[in-house]
Structures are given as C-alpha cells and as structure tokens.
Amino acid sequence: MAKEILRPHAEDAFAKEIAVLKELDKDPRPVNWELSPRAVVTYILGGELEDGTNISVKYYGNRRLVELAVATLVTDRALMLVGIPGTAKTWLSEHLSAAISGNSKLLVQGTSGLSEENLRYGWNYARLLAEGPTNKALVPSPVMIAMQEGKVARVEELTRIPSDVQDALITALSEKIIPIPELNAEVQAVAGFNLIATANDRDRGINELSSALRRRFNTVVMPLPASLEEEVTIVKERVAQIGQKMGLPEQAAPIEEIKRLVTIFRELRSGKTEDGRRKIKIPSSTLSTAEAISVVNNGQALATHFGDGVIEAKDIAAGLLGAVVKDVSQDRAAWEEYLEAVVKDRKGWEDIYEASKELL
Image (tube, rainbow, N blue to C red; front, side):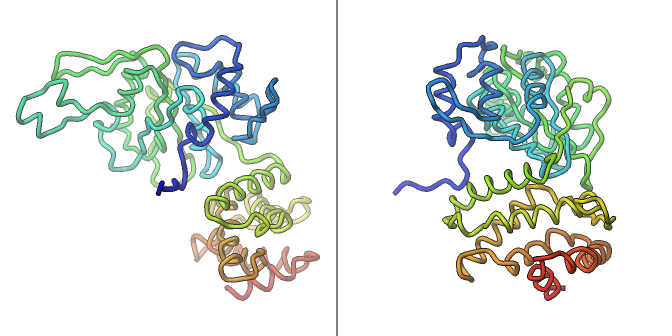
C-alpha cells in the first residue's frame, strides 16, 4: 500500500501544471531554467492558458513584486525575501525554485547552531580517515549541488544563522565559486545557479546580515495582504487545501467564520478597527495570515471530531486565544480590552465574545 505524503514538494504536487506550462511556453528561457520568466510568473499567480488549462494561484499578492523576484533570479544577484512570519516567504521561495529548476529540495534550514559545512561542504569522516581528503570523501552542501547543476538553492531563515557563518555565502554569491583548499580545487557555478534566502525581520533570536553579504542580494519585502477580502481568500484557499489532506470536510469552515477571524487578526495587527474609528492595543504576537489558517484548521478538527461538523464560535475561540496571547503579562490585557471594547458591542458577535470570555 502506497504511503500518502502529507505535504508533497511543489514540483510533485503541481507537476501537471508545470508540464503544461513547459509544453506551451514559447518565450525564451534562461539557461537551465524549466520555464521562461513569464511562465514562472503565470505558474505563481495562476491563470487560464491558451489550451484552456487552469493554473491555480500559488501566491495572492502584487504582480509586480513577483515579477521583480523572478527578474532578480535571471541576473547574477541572489534574491532575499524579507518579512514578518506568515507572509508566505517560504511558500513563494519553494514555488519559485520548483518552477525554475524543477527541484525545490536544495534547501538549507537556518538555525542558530548551523555550521559553515551546511553552506559549503563537509566530509564523510570514515572515508576521510581511511583515504584522506578525496572527492569521494567530500559531502557537498545543497548550495554546492545547486552550483554544480545550475539550479536554485534555498536558504530558509538566513538571519537565524550566526553572522560569521552567514558570510560563508559571500564567495559563492560574488565569485560564483566555492574553494576546496583541502583538494587544491574549487567548484564553479554552472549557468542557472542562483540562491533564494528568506529572512525574518521581527522575531527574537535573529542576527544582522553583514553589509558585504547584504550587497549580494536584491531584497523583496513581503507584505501582509492588502485588503480584508484578499486575506479571507488566502485563508479560505489554504484551509481547503490543508483540510483535504487532513480528511476534513470543506463545509466545516464557513466563510463567515473565516471573515470574522481575519477581521480580528487585521484589527489587532493594525491597532485600530477596520472602520478606523477606534484605536486598539497591539499584542506582541504577529497574528499573520499563516496563524489565521492554523486557527481555522484547528477549529475544523474540533468541529469534525468533537462537534457537529461545522465550525462554531467556541471552536475558533480556543485557537484564537493561543494565537493572540503569546506573552501572558502583555497580550492578555490587550485581548481582554479588545473583547470588551470591540467584540462585545459588535452585532452578531455575541457568540465569539461569550466563548472567548469563558476561556480567560
């Protein structure tokens, strides 16, 4: 019996779309690119092709922003996607590399304990002791493999990596080589190589990029959704996709509940109600679109397995409290004030007010 993968890689999940785009793509492609830049943008933003094939939307946002990101990867500059958590940095990075290289798996996950070996190369120490430094004993990093094959590498959470380790990328990005002094050799980048990094500019535990490394990137700032309607659409689409994988019925997440949750998140993020009439305390939590998706999916699971199958206020309230109140000393007061000043008097919101108050 075949195992069901919870989250296939983008190039596997959307293989049919990429294949159709590749077949119909008449625009010039950079060396070692699977699709032309124009086709990559179509893959990301969706649309209907000339043969009637519908390409699903992978990213809801400004078209020019996506075009800028793709255009950067045509040049010799690396791409930096910067933004608060939950602004689809990783999501866009994965889909860009899938559409361009057909491979989104050349990934380095940034952590505070990462070493230079993870960005350049390491050694199989058993072979190193037995044979000394040889090509067979060398263990290339995902970045080195991308250079050798002319593909796009990804570095997630670059600012989580210690600053002195980050700088191991400078030579690869500026000179397009990785020296291997132990072998008196070097790896030179093949045409098509580039790198996409994501960086968090808000959470604790992040490290500044050196000016030398920052100069090697073109930076694209990832914004939060511009309007309530856009954010509701994003949450609705992603909830349906994730819920399908979890075996949850789509009708478990009514659009009215999603809109109400997104409204709460947007108001707490901005520090004012949607109509701009009342100011609100801003909690320390980011309250991103990704967190809204998580709250709805959690509500789906509660409603499906412990309720009547349709999300109610009590199902949303349980996840909402955990999303808003990250720092009890600061966020609890902000949440209580919001409930009393905004939610309590809002018509039709009595159920979410009562359910939320019960949890405090």
